[in-house]
Figure 1: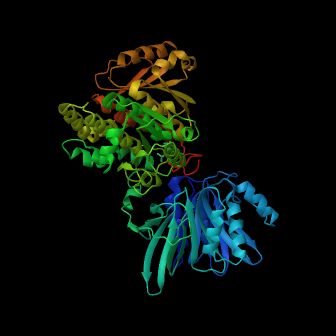
Figure 2: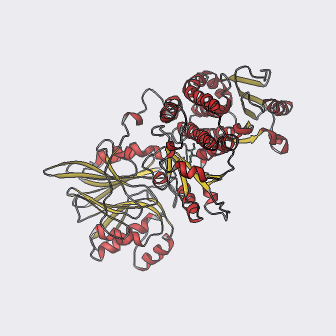
Length: 617
Ligand code: M6R
């Protein structure tokens, strides 16, 4: 979702800005633009890909030592060049340009005021009010840095902003609240230094690894003479400079055609990395989740899991594990619902947020809402160490999946599941519900998980074959039971988001309560069918489908009780993995969605209308 890059240097920053935007493409966008500053300001914007923007910038011979750049994911106002950022405000000899990520909630009131002051609006965006507001403060005689401080005091909502103005060369200012923005500290030499702003580190890896994460309310000024930061109260602030561990290779496509494909096949390694601290130990310990974990877990009587999308599905799986293994009651809530619901806060609740990015606006707001209800024990299971969610949680366990660039979440999901399983073991052990022999057995299964997943990945050819039959369909049903019902939900989400086939998931026992009416020969039914305690029940549900002419596509374990026959297609994945089975059974569903999308020719890594990191509500 919207990406920002800003740069000041003693050299041409246009290639740096364009490359930065290219590296932010994964976040999702529909238009892009840059504004550069020499004696005057120039702007180039385009609907579509960053490569189109680059071609246009080349045509106009854009060269400058200062600039801001943006990829836009439309919220206020449609996808068009006039709505693409940067936005300008120019009047009475003062010119400013602004890029923004987030939503300004009081934009209507500000717009009315600015219209009254004679400003003219040329876009449908909320961002344009920032440009005019900033302009008004600069026009009153303030320097850009002070004008930005004054401006953000008047904004309600979430934002990351970068701005430049004619007359203050070698200067970019920025601010953030609720949306990510970091400072990149570049090379310096006797002539000066170069500094950068960006939505995430990957945008800057080409120029620096030294970054500082801005806090909510911070305003920053970068120049060739250094940088300065003030906090929300306007007091000078220092933010620690850290060396990013992100490697350039981890965001390269390598031998793969798409990031989603790469990330599906990275899962065994991602799980092994995530489990490193667990599988090297002889038993699980609360300390894996942070120094305070032992104490917090000991008083936990109830768990509340908050998440969105795929991460929410991970939470749904975890509920089965946590209740069955640790005996702790668990509620799982969609973050965007929970944050606005009048709920009853149970004392001694551990709030667990699950998120790949750690910047999902709804999940962050849900955590804050839980805190206001008095629930202060929080654990974040997250893939991005420096993210807002991790920083705002008392406990954390980082999934070490590496950057997930494809919009369709895959390796983040399986590593989240792995951590949630470890959480169930830790809590069970602490409550003396896990006999040492059982703990050893489960640890051995965890150690074997990467190998078991490699085995499952070998089903790709068979799945590819099925994909050709799925591709012409308009609808699909996914069925599962018990802990595999959320896996069916995740399979349906994957299929709809990248192949645009309408897919719904049902707990198989629910079929006869409604959805069976949809089943006919045109309705493919995907079944998650491990050899667990519910297999016989599931078999009966499959008969119900076959009796109505529905074609079954069954992902089963070796030695399955389900027989292939006319209308019943089966892929055997391997030995039944017991409690860890959901982590393996989601993999063929990811592969199915990927291959169906390939056949249908959709943009697999950047599906229409979707963004990788959902930083607005
Ligand atoms: O970064 P998060 O895990 O908080 O993101 C939540 C959802 O937006 C995300 O899981 C989304 O559903 C997936 N990208 C879909 O594949």
